[in-house]
Amino acid sequence: MKVDRAIGDVRDSEQNLARHLLQFAERHAAEHDLYHTGHTLARECERHLAELAPFAEQYHAAPPDVEVASSPRIVDQLRRMGSDLLGRSEVSGMMLIEDLRHLYLAVQDAELAWVILNQVAQAVRDGPLHEMVVQCHEAAEMRGKWVRTRVKESAPQIFST
Image (cartoon, rainbow, N blue to C red; front, side, top):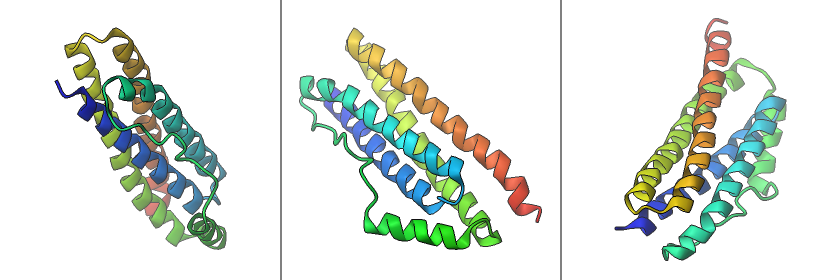
């Protein structure tokens, strides 16, 4: 069985999601809850990657990069300055909806990767891997619920003005 491939898919999708979350947070820094939640969820991705690392080694998969949510780069600082300039304008509202849509796709990709790894862990009867996957998958589902809730809160405000 190709457990290493399923682990690699989770690794790639969690790393990609962490980057998306940080970009999202910096782009919408004027909205403090988005900024802080984005960074918190990116750190959660890092924790998931750290928990995945021993299993990646066990199954000879490439090790995850567990330091995805590092300090802001110049591009992130420029995004944040743009966010501060736009504030809560109509343009920033439309950007928020579009960014939430893209973020939701990244969140769903990561969540589905956990579902696949869960099935693989059960198939190979690896109890410790399965236990870790179940916990991380629950957190992955919560990220999707957070993004959907944010869309439901934001869309009426943005599109009714």
